[in-house]
Image (cartoon, rainbow, N blue to C red):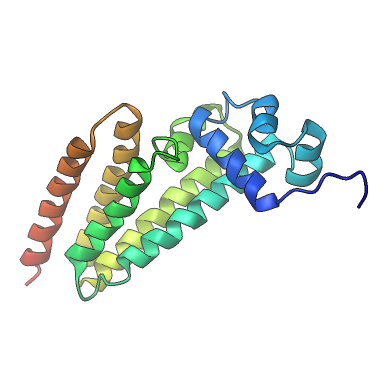
Length: 196
């Protein structure tokens, strides 16, 4: 249409997601989103929604993008549980090491800000963390761990995974992050050997 600026919604959502990821919800203004997406404020509102709606879309986008990668990593858990779990952690470590992405994790960052966020955003962050634990629990059950052990290890591994993101944002080195992963992998190895 003549006079109307055309834009790619996926590109705009990715740009908004990175802006929120980099600065957080509270420290991202509509002007920041406008600069990041290349859209004016009225285009953001009319095409992407208000700030809360846009944040929810970005959070869902982030969870789907990395959730798919985690699912692929864990897909071999029934045959090779240690390799699958190592690949799970590699998804996070590769994301952290990517110089084109902000440090940390949008979901972890959102969870830490829950006291100042809307109830809808808080609920979505809690839901995303629950999906992560469920994904891990299913993989650990597929590896033939007892339900209680699978539940406990799923909570532990999800917490370690989130802590990697927090530690990276605080400047931890790849070597430090890998040492944390190695300790969790040793605990999982012991639990897998104990089941036999």
